[in-house]
Length: 422
Ligand code: EPU
Image 1 (cartoon, rainbow, N blue to C red):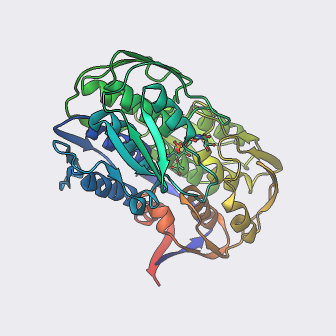
Image 2 (cartoon, rainbow, N blue to C red; image 1 turned 90 degrees about the horizontal axis):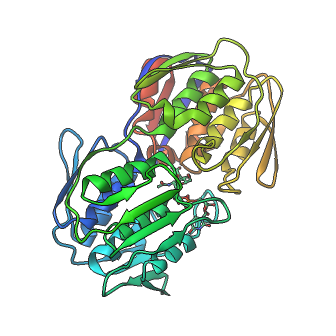
């Protein structure tokens, strides 16, 4: 198991390039199932979750390969085993997004029900409700979702809202299934996240007829068949936002390349309230801080609101603010594994239900800490860059799930991160 040893405090400066989006790439890889031919996905990051998604598709019968340029080819001509095995789904919850395309393509899908996860309870009831509205017969057997539609799916009006807003992967599942359903589907309360827009654009390139892309109302005119795609995935807005927080917390200046500021409006707005200078350009952004960190209140929301996937990183930044901030988590009310670890580094945090009151401190102090999930771990890296002393982060495989070789990319900017195998 690898650990990170991180020296601080450091000031980061220089340029860094954002990779393709993991959360856009995963559902798009599943979309390859819809076409009985070859699809090519370009710019997908080289992360363990992407490898797991490839393994899952291989188990279904697809031929999956990655070439030297990093492009992933998926040949879904034959799908002889429409089963998403527990052993893979338990490793990666996003495996659930094969359910819709498998059902649409094969008329049957058997996918393990995802289990618990470090960021809290994550049901899939809305996914199933949406697929049932398209005519699927769905039951739960021995921990597996068994979905059948032997005579195909039929378009319908579907409301995908839930207690915490829409569902990103639920929208992906229903959208992919509806693309091959007979007739028209209208998805109301669809997720508006850029990753869903990227999926919808990719589906249209395959021959789907989707309109309203990027809005909460998607209209899909079902088609009889789809062809493979050749698609370049969008830049990862969460990775970009993490690098922005890194510039801010180290009082540095980073030029972030391959980022789309339009995907990060809520984040950029918050950074400016905090006193950070953000200069967006067409395909990048420069982020710098020269003055103190000002306190700010953050409420996570579905896109275009402030993303839950940046809550932990921004809480870390606010831990060093000149005053008190309030962070409210409205998407995953239990996504606070980082609170106890940041407290070990001398952050002053008080959790009350889905709210954390952050009383700014003058400095963070290095400590041994434990990575718990992907974004909480990124927050610990940020804390360590700013903290006095040597922070040791255990279980960095969580970080590796979402950030490709983070130490090799931050060290040229002035970070001092060492990976060790223990
Ligand atoms: N929800 C339900 N029922 C459902 C589905 C969701 O009640 O059937 C609830 C969830 O429990 C949660 C809320 O709705 O409270 C939103 O969950 P959503 O379904 O949108 O999450 P997801 O699609 O499973 C994706 C990302 C997450 C990201 C969330 C929210 C991928 C692979 N995962 O998850 O990313 O936090 O959307 O934006 O795209 C991460 O990258 O670290 C990560 C966890």
